[in-house]
Length: 342
Image (cartoon, rainbow, N blue to C red):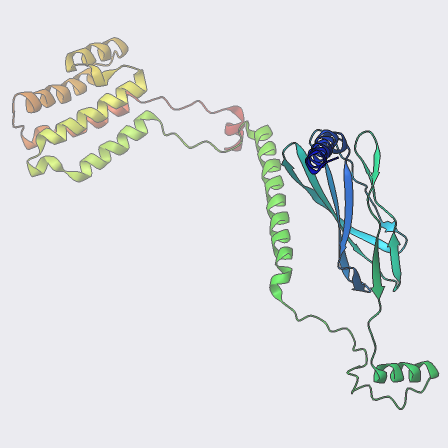
């Protein structure tokens, strides 16, 4: 065979191999693979190492990592299991699951494999090892330990070793703020007891008197009117040339009294309407006459700019007292119990 024929045959072989690889790759890619590493590979007793379990699988696979409650193998304890890191690229999912481990026995540990379940099959990782060593002791420390084992403690300088005797427990200093909760507790209990006492008092008071709190004392209408007349009399504003203001206040006092005493809306009525209503409810002529003198004089002062004589102002004041006293509520009839007490 000539060289050109050999060359063509070599090219065909390369193409065949390349096609075989491309065809076989998806088939192989359907199966998950696992690889485990540990860092560092050598630790001292009590130190920690990190096992990284890496799984490469198609993205539609559901991978179940092994869960270790205490030990991976006897001697290698699991401190924590970290959540997996997931990376998906070109329909390929890469997961990294990490275990924090430690050991308290100095030896060389061999971990044969870690099992992973991909939903169909169990995949096993590669094996790995962890070397655990004890801390090295100096010759002087070994000498001291040897003496302690033989009971020759008198020749050991413990101060040089910075080993001191066990000291008694030291009490913490007193800080009053540490006991502040007791004060708040006492205040809270006192407030609770006071609230309970108040509730009991209100209930008892309700049963005895018919109300929880004592209602405010409401003075009778004639008493309030008399008090207002006393205040107006003490001001003596009619002597200051303020007759219009005096009669406005005087009639307002009487109008409110009539409304509260008889229920007549005197605040909205004219003087004539008020007198008509008073004539209907009172047969005493002096009641009507006294009120008429006041209202008539007030209308003249307010609307006709009438200047009353000083005697007229005094008369209006006296007639206001007479009107209130003549129309006030009658004194209540005493009960038998009140008469017996007297």
